[in-house]
Amino acid sequence: MNILENKHHIMLRELDGVPAEVRDSVKLCFELLSAAAAINRVCAIRLARYNLSEGRFVIMLTLKSAGGKLSPLELATRLSITTGTVTGLLDGLQGDGFIKRKTDPTDRRKLIITLTADGKRVVDEVFAEHTDWISAIIQGLSLEQRQALSESIYCISASHALSQQLPDEH
Image 1 (cartoon, rainbow, N blue to C red):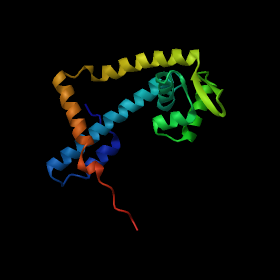
Image 2 (image 1 turned 90 degrees about the vertical axis):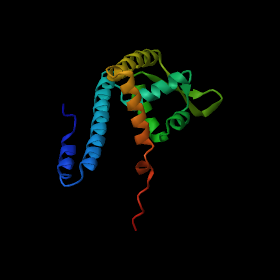
Image 3 (image 1 turned 60 degrees about the vertical axis):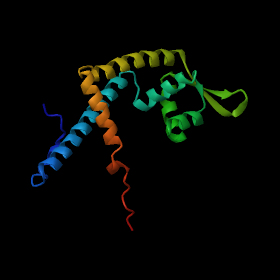
């Protein structure tokens, strides 16, 4: 089975003269990237059925976990995104009837974002379905394969090569 994207095949062809260990390492990295891209693509398609993006879904989950009420600034802080990004996501969620913006009774300058009943229903439904789907991606792996994958991903994430900064160009 070939999971590599065309761009990866093109880059691998350029590695014909390098040692096999280097080529195999690059190919394995490309396989990991391709698998992650496939997961992201399917995730986006599945969420789109509910008129959600990953960002909109995460906003709804964050509101739910906070008891259904947060300010836009609190959402931005919890999600490490800008308030401008939050505003755009909230506009779409409000347009679809998933959230309401209300003035904070203790500070009229502040907004409180709440999930509507429809928003609560959708986030619960999508979360259950999404969790089952994500689990199904990994279910075919044995316990040993899961442990090896987890350890490998951890080692890759902790790689010194990923922590290196590129030199400033002057």
